[in-house]
Structures are given as C-alpha cells and as structure tokens.
Length: 126
Image 1 (tube, rainbow, N blue to C red):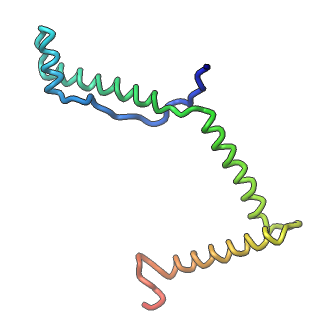
Image 2: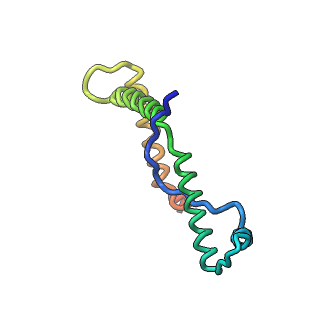
Image 3: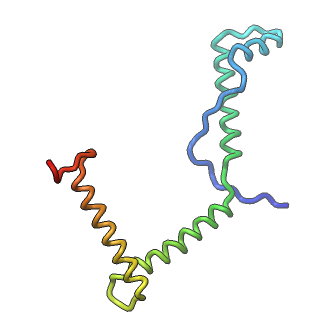
C-alpha cells in the first residue's frame, strides 16, 4: 500500500527526554567516560531536539483529509454566498431574502447592544 502524501510541518514541537538530566549523566557514566555537566546538558538538549523533530514528523497531516475539509468549506462558502446575496439586485428565493433579513436584524441588534454596554456597564442608564 502506497503511503499517503503528507503536508509540510507547520510550527514547532518542544519535547524533552522522558528521564531527567541526572539519569542521563548516570547512563553516560557507565560508558566509562566522564562527562562534565555542560556536556550532559548539551547532549540532553540535543536529545530533546531529536524527539521534537520526531513528534513534528509524526504530526504532519495527510493531504487527502485536509483537501476534503477545504472542499467542504468551499461548498459551504458557495452556499453562504448565494444565501447572503438575498438583498442584492436580481432574482432570489423567499428563503434567501428572509435569511438575510433575519441575519441583518440580528447583527444590528448585536451592534446596538455593543454600543450600549461598555466593559459590562450599561451606558443607557448612566
């Protein structure tokens, strides 16, 4: 089975090894080589970078589900555009006209309420 195409990585991941720096130092000391604190810190940070890169790679989304989601949005935007054009010049169904009328009234009432209330204080009674 062919592997599905994946999209590029966006953003970044931050991770650290599951064990602490002290345990890394103990493991490294079993290699019969003494590592100073700065070297252990550098190696610990490098392990974190490797783990972060692996997490990012594993989290890359597959292209097909993203494309499917974008197609659904495009269909919905096309429908929304048609319906929201209910007050434009031309022939429209009564549903398109009513939907835009209700939406316009609602947005106007929300805008009015937004002007009346400032930081939770009703300015009409002040």
